[in-house]
Image 1 (cartoon, helix red, strand yellow):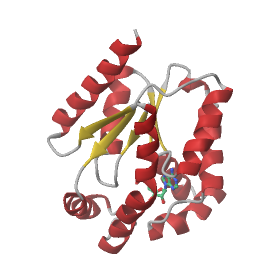
Image 2 (cartoon, helix red, strand yellow; image 1 turned 90 degrees about the vertical axis):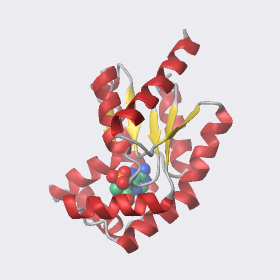
Image 3 (cartoon, helix red, strand yellow; image 1 turned 135 degrees about the vertical axis):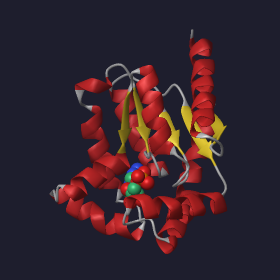
Image 4 (cartoon, helix red, strand yellow; image 1 turned 180 degrees about the vertical axis):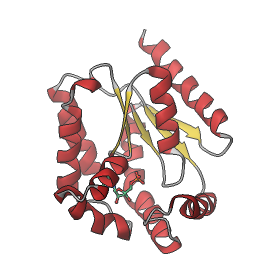
Length: 191
Ligand code: AMP
């Protein structure tokens, strides 16, 4: 499964909840990058300059990181990718990884929310977490990139008939329930 949504739509929070409820591992590319930045690894040092500016880390770097992560044993029972793919080139790359391991995506969960709501949420988060990419100029740039690049990713999955759009505005529990219902729909269609 994938979870896609603009910055501030609650992807990370919801991915963790779905992961707990279903016992599938949640993999957040943003979290992996942040852990590397914190640990000052070569990957982290490379990624930091893009992240601080709100830019995408280049596809080559991101794709390799995802490929390595998906080769670990804990993905055997399924996985939920959070924050990847964000570009159509990443979609193609992920298709290749999945084809190689004879896997396919069951569902792409899309969290929706309007930009002004997202900006105010993220400015709130900036106060709480001090994330270095949560200031207004960078937030707006990340939203622009979502519209310019990631909406094309969403469109691709919609064409394939595996997109489940979910309203991301609402109480955390309500959104989780909508997500679980969308997953249950897909599961019953597969059976
Ligand atoms: P997130 O926590 O998902 O908002 O990601 C934080 C930052 O990590 C993004 O603003 C990008 O700089 C970087 N990042 C995360 N996932 C990707 C990706 N799939 N492609 C490129 N950059 C990414």
